Length: 369
Ligand SMILES: [Zn+2]
Image 1 (tube, rainbow, N blue to C red):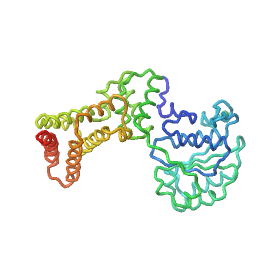
Image 2 (image 1 turned 135 degrees about the vertical axis):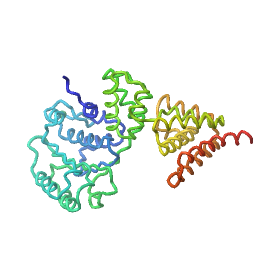
Image 3 (image 1 turned 60 degrees about the vertical axis):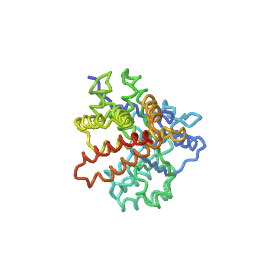
Image 4 (image 1 turned 180 degrees about the vertical axis):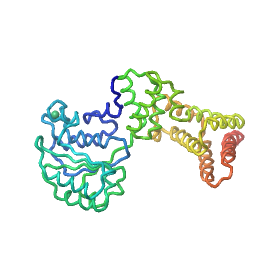
């Protein structure tokens, strides 16, 4: 049986060009490499699964490459590059500070740092989740960071920049990684699907991207989950059931109902959604996001921050055209007060039902005027 390789590993980027959604960071790193302006310490900050470790590995590979390209990319052909790609290079050392955060772990690392590399020019030390180091480990590490040997480069990665002490921050070049957009993720998954011969709709990929909440790694594992459950042609309905996501169509339909003041239809629809097992608080949040998306779709300036793609984006544009600005503001106010009362409410379902009735009223009162 052929070994199954998870997509996050199989499609791990091997050059700066294939890193998704971090163009400004990769081009700055490439410039630093081509102009030979390398720092001794870098701090890569940003949410999980956005390419921090991938960029650190590509950086380490490039600065050790025997024939880097003119624009600062690794050749992926020389002995050093092949060693990196096969995971057997001695020029890269990775420490996960989440599980190795003691002073002893740092002592082992700093002892290693003193030894120059046998092959290649640089030894690169990647310390992941560096904010997890204990205070004494931090202090132990500081000495090495202050006077690193010429061959050593540190790349510290963290999801929580605010937890890094100023003495470390001031010694690092800091790079802030972006959260992935839905469009970034959908495009990447589309490329993988065409390579793998998977037939999956853009709407399905959008659902996966939304659920992954800006983390490519999560998106790839959700994608693997869907493909391993439903084969080469996973259907949209199967995917939303599998990922426990509410079909976004419900929100579009609810708004249409509100616009028509269709109170009874809306309440029946709510009942249908709750029967599927979705909880009221996530519905309040989902509906609030939907109103917000409609509001930002109304203006060409704000539409840029609408984090959706293709058909879903078109649907927002179309529906926002039907909604007045007042209808949307009133709706957001009602949802906001429902959200605020949620925790203390003794009957949460009734609270939300009343909010829905009021949402239907907003358009009817506007029509009368
Ligand atoms: Zn090379």
